[in-house]
Image (cartoon, rainbow, N blue to C red; front, side):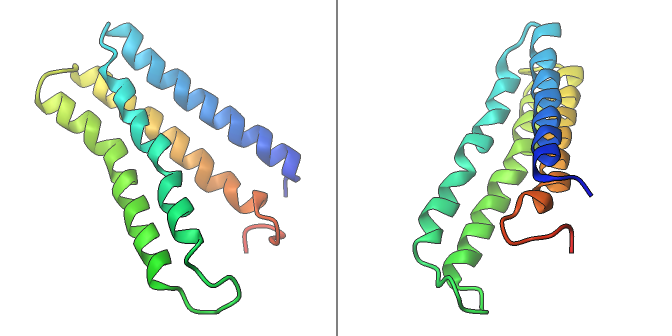
Length: 127
């Protein structure tokens, strides 16, 4: 089981590899439009910021605001794949650039999904 320092390094490495793949998808095909796939990543903290102030910290139930925040986060998560697909459909970017952009999104999401359980404050691991 990795320590918090190792998990932070692993998360940073995964995000760096994903971002490098995204930049590669832009640079190889000379189209910088795939960088718009980063916009949901910048907007992702906003639902948490707005909904965390409305939640009760010590109740066992999930409030309507937490459900709303999860819904918005899911909407933004699907947007990371939807934007490259729409750009490929409109022939703004090539299929290779779109697939490499979506591969970068998979790498970044997988690194967050793998290492985030180890970075929680009150957690001792995955379960």
